[in-house]
Image (cartoon, rainbow, N blue to C red):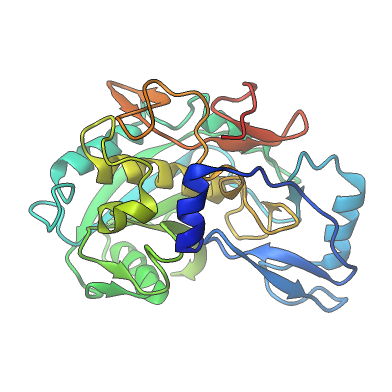
Length: 328
């Protein structure tokens, strides 16, 4: 979910729907997991990393598949029930911002609750329109366990530092090693991610080999660190703009991790994943944007959650699987 600061501000005003386009014979765009893509120039044997894959295979899919605005590149998706783990990094009790609090913990725990949460909802089921050669995304996921981490990598995290936080949590036994899971590193507002948090992105997802397994993980920082860049509204439905901002960013990263966990499955010709294609678009709202508007209700809480790209009916952004497509 990476983008320039200028783009972040622009999309809040006018969202543009992205569609697949043709690419030249030996080149195509591949996602980074951070909301932008890089140009890939792949040798004919296709052996240049799992995020690239074979250009010949990609071209075959592009020629023979009804793309719905997004293409399959041969990689795996996450099937079955996906477990979610939270690593609360920094000070979430008495932090620098009001949202660095246990209220935020409670709101995001509720969002990922096993019953009545985002997982398995009509919004999450949009992801069930994606599959690989052996399995289909179910859209079912829930929070299994959480832990805390007190600045072990300092207040200026690198991408490698985020991976180290996940590794430490698993290696220490505080969280289990789970290959069909998504680990979130959630940082308080006094923590920076030096590869571009607040200036280029609001969150990202990736994967790495950790203790012998392909582990999927995501970074999401408290957007109260940079509200004008990473929050849609300062007056939010739960009276906590940091938590409410994180909710949509986390939903974005979850959808992308389910459908493109190793960065080689589902994305369009511009390298946009299914969350990127609908970033900062909401569909119909209850209330007015900027004044506590919301579009989803989970349990007893209302949330403003971006739409997700549905991979059917020609493709489009919607709030629920099979629902009406919207472009803003």
